[in-house]
Length: 193
Image (cartoon, rainbow, N blue to C red; front, side, top):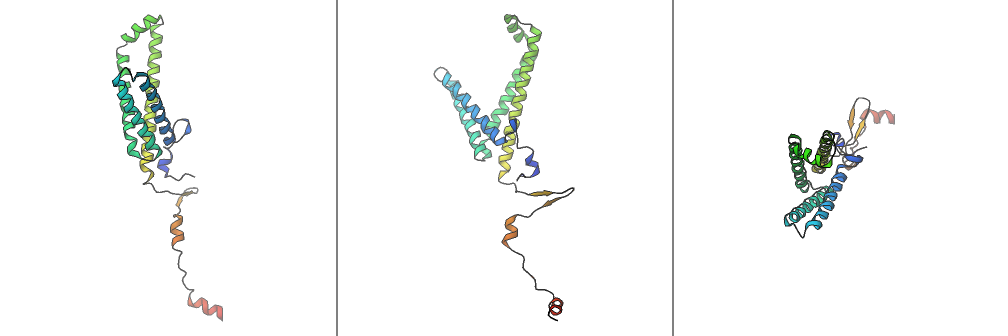
């Protein structure tokens, strides 16, 4: 039985049936490791790439920490980066689709069928954009989950055929036991007689 309200229960899983917090932590760690490798490859030659890599390591670390420690404000920069990355890749995809001469010139050098390769490139770009959109959705769901973690009441539901009954919290029922009222006067006289 889930301890979350029904609205949050459906949006807490992501790829490979893991929790959105776990998915965001894994995505943040993946970005940190890949950016860390890029940083060390280009740190001696390109200072701009080094600065961007360090910034990405910090943003990815913030997302990982925010998802792990249930701090939603730490996830926002990573979510903004993911949205920016998706928009940038969409613009590149549109440029490749509406200006296919660059792809055709490259493919002609490879001696491959141009039409086949154009369809393959379009399919590949579409798959990348779908994956990036899904990752944005996972990070967004993690942000919503972490944001609502402290404010959501924990509800226990017992579901019967057509009704749902809310059980009161355990502390409310135990803290103040109901006071017993004395039996009615007619009951005590009839018992003693």
